[in-house]
Length: 503
Image (cartoon, rainbow, N blue to C red):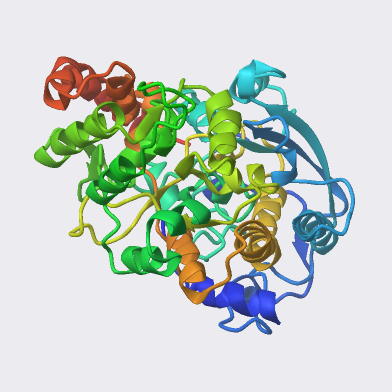
């Protein structure tokens, strides 16, 4: 999911200094008075001073209202898209200014319906959209929603094809091109997009936190750890070795329990996804026509599953906690802060849980499968936010122009504020060149897989490793063989429906 840009250099400079596809839609009120034809297609600038939106400067939508569903997973995450006022906090104010700048540039106004998914507390975004479109109601213009929840709607002709939209420039660095491609099948059909339009992907990229006090007590220097990562030697086997060395029976009862010191704490649910895909395991690949096919049942996956099982259940330095958010958000961070965990696996948003941590920590990627793996990877979790338009949208031009401008504003202002100031400085407490280089590497090497995105339409293919670890099983080949026909059948059905959609 790499961006096609030297993003880390840009960030450093910024901080330091209706029922139709878009290709067929009519103009719905946007005007570019006296604008030359070339105004809408401007090459992206290469320096901060020249960086500019690709939309015409005099685009004016006459104060039109854009009605937005802001769907997200955790109750307190509405801020990823919008905030109500400037507070002086660097991230808050960058998001606030994105709203003001977009509304001002395009002469539009935004209204929001916030919906969060955790616990089903205040509604299901996909169900809300489905009811509206099925009823033929023009209730919403722009949808933001959790990936796992919203993507299946494309199969019901509920989501608009964005391919060919005049104002969307999906080849620009504020859009995540590889991610967008993974969400699609074939050519000429783009139903979901994501990028710097919200913080909903960046905050859900995985990374691993290291207790620096524990590390230096047991190993020579944090610098050595950074060097090991940068030299490509931070592997799954190396993680296992260190975890074994870190175990200590703190309460002296001769039993492995929650009160002991461990190398790492894990759960068998979502963290398993990240240990898998970050190790370069793929469930699908693409043919010459951009059609996905199954390829997960191979020697590498079989070996990885065995290694993962061994880490979870045979390594004394690994504690498997209950598979819930209390473990992720309370129990494991508390042990990490108490110097009872060396490694805390999580996501960029996990740093927000560590603001009051008494000791310093470092941030490194999840380990590679082995040293031969070319890059460290960071899976964007399935609660990441993607955006789309319902087929009932009657303001296609206005809405897609808004999306483009919001993404640009996010790239230019919000991303640097969150990534460079909040993540790099405010939370990590480590500004060495090596630490900064590693953070950039995690961000730039984010990844996903078609089967992970469409898991719930593929009979659980994307989460099969999670199922195995939860059941304390290590025989991938056998488990896959039992489900292979069902996987293939679901994939064939998905491809058939997807490629037959006309809009």
